[in-house]
Amino acid sequence: MFLLTSTLLLVSAVVYVCHAEQMLKCPYDSKFSPQKYPERVWCKKEANNQSCCRGFTFTSGEKELDGGRLSVQDDGKAFTVSVRSLSQGDGVYWCGLKNGSGIIVKLAEGEIHNPLNLAWSIIRWLLFVLLLLAVISTHMCYNSKKAKD
Image (cartoon, rainbow, N blue to C red; front, top):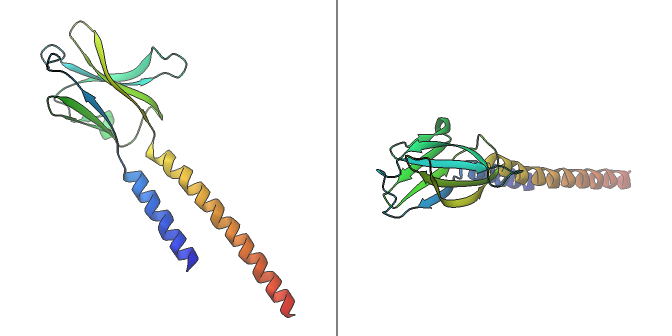
């Protein structure tokens, strides 16, 4: 019974974590109109150089990015990037607007983690506990049989 309950908890935790989307909301003023700032920016800070980042630009009309790994919603006051999986890995990401002259206005920053990495960090500890319980129960069973003989 315990093993069945543990398995169900493990599976439901993995399913929840793998399907949980992380979001970064990027609010902007009306002065940053799509006419003046036609491009949006999604970028990951580089660990060794905090002033540099790797990423890409996209227009306000685009709804999916990075092969469907990211989705974008724009309500005219903010655009929100929803992360399904990260092609560039865990880290600090930021979003912004870019005008025709190449000037970028940073709007928001947040730490984003790959849901599968989080799932593995949970699963490995649950598996460790289950393995420990299996060893203890095997030892108790062996001692019980030995005492009867």
